[in-house]
Length: 222
Length: 222
Image: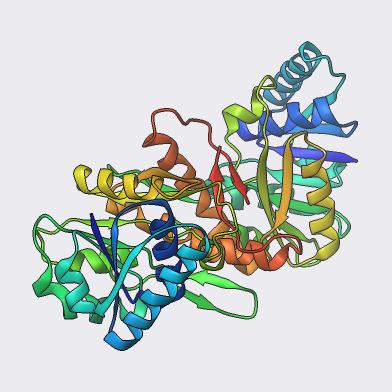
């Protein structure tokens, strides 16, 4: 399978690229607005995987080219770039592609981080509105600490929550998630349940901030 | 210590009563609008603890009497009864008492449960507004599956999140939480961070609903 990581030079893109690079045979397409940056990141991730004993196929492209070549397109961009990024690649999306959104809208004040969804109700809903209607959208990978994900020496042993209205797309993304060692995919239901999933991201940051011995937190449902 | 469980005939009150009853020597005061119901529940909980090999001191009172006698007052009532319950006991609260709120506002639609905070921003904020200013308020015990908590045969092995602006009150409640076997207390910061904590409650229900092998879910931060 070909997986595009749009905005893949950022930290969540890096984490997913090196995990899939080490743990699977999927072809990984790092996308960026700047294809030179994408190629440099792809080379960097390939070296990281090689240093961990893996042999990954990771290439860099501009976002539209990465999206065009991919079966699964991950919007690994900050929430305020989601709409622009989807607009830039919308023509490249086929009905049998799957778009994945891991972003959560947050704001920070002196107390901590707070969930701050866009007007659509969640970033996932915003993506659903922006992506062509026939292309399924899946919310996943929100609650993974990017630094831990990118550090292949760290075991995961955590869960990721999947929301989708299309069962086949949900199954594809859940399978891709569980191909990462130590990651379990759990369904949180339909896209309408995305806000509660996205709210977990600021909560994880607040818990990590307020407990000295915890950092790069994930969550396990038990 | 004396702990009042207002609305303690409900499921979260039962769970906390039998856990503290089995695992600690605290005196537990079950409160209800109907003192007869409170006494019947207290007897029932005492038997449950005895059947598990424990020896608990659990008594039943009307809510105001339970609150008046307690050092820590837990508002184990549904969110729509929180304001009424606080109003009924406000005169009994002393400055060295601690009020604990475990409730989360939720609404349900065909997709699942959704966080539905009151106008104050969170149930915790509503409680803070309703309780006399000098009495500290702590949010805790939101994310415990009541059925699992009340079943003393089930191990917990889960976390509860604590939010508070008063460090001493937070420490008291965290200590009470960790006296329950298998429960770890983690700080999620100040009361301003309560909404993200309360949002975890509908999320846990949605995850349990959508995964066949999961029920009575708790969460572990790792």
